[in-house]
Image 1: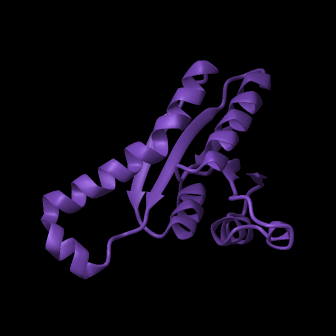
Image 2 (image 1 turned 90 degrees about the vertical axis):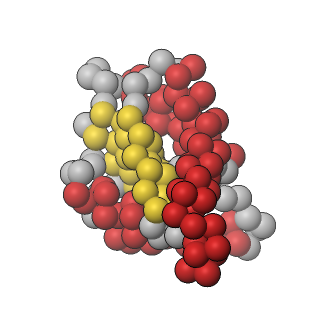
Image 3 (image 1 turned 90 degrees about the horizontal axis):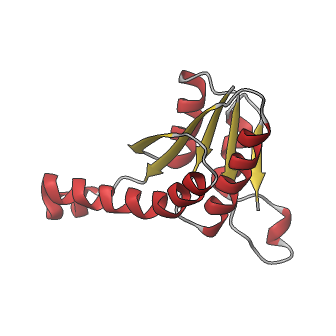
Length: 140
């Protein structure tokens, strides 16, 4: 089984990582787990101001921040994983990777909201559920 764990650095991402770890531990055969982070591209003016190296550093810092706590949670659970980091609109990138890599399950967090907003998924999660073409587990 191939599982895509989509993360953004939020506490919900860490909860999703813990959930994915529990799923992996319960399986008779360890799944292929890919931790996936998509960083929004910078506006053109900001990228020009930072330059090529500055822009690359910016995205690398964002990815490290998004992955740090998730790496720790998965390592503590002794679950093997690989990482994939891209610079793209998150929902579209998750859907595209899930399809191209023939992912069987997407696991991701959704940010907690107030009572009324809590009834609805976040916009990224909603787009992934609608477009992934595979089961999506959304962890609050």
